[in-house]
Length: 197
Image: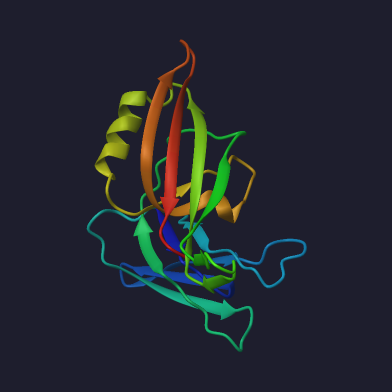
């Protein structure tokens, strides 16, 4: 029910033409340029929701068109896939993002001079989400997360009405905890690490 794109670099707009059953079914578009001052930064992930979910076993083709922000540089795409979305829990506050650096910074012991070696980085997210067990059971959440353990997936921690690119992580979770807070609601805490960017 969605076209998922991750690992985007230097892409300002994109379109996805979805064809199945012998004809073009729909064309999805997205703008990846942040609002306000952006210094040339563009979003790295996009989730394009299909108007009509595709039945399992259907042969599908998706034609992607990427428009570069800076035409002197290449546009890059790491992952493109059709996927099924699952809504597990809601986030409202307290979602924390960090950068895990793989660059090397080495200080000379004698004179203190520093040598730098630029490498990639990853994004780390720690989130505490809440859910109503009358809507989705914690047992279902735990089973779904166990089924996708040990493989990269796209996790979106945006609350309804927010659109933060840094809260969409293509990676894997390293910690999952559910807490029964009370009769009416429970919480899901996750630690997530992106692939190297």
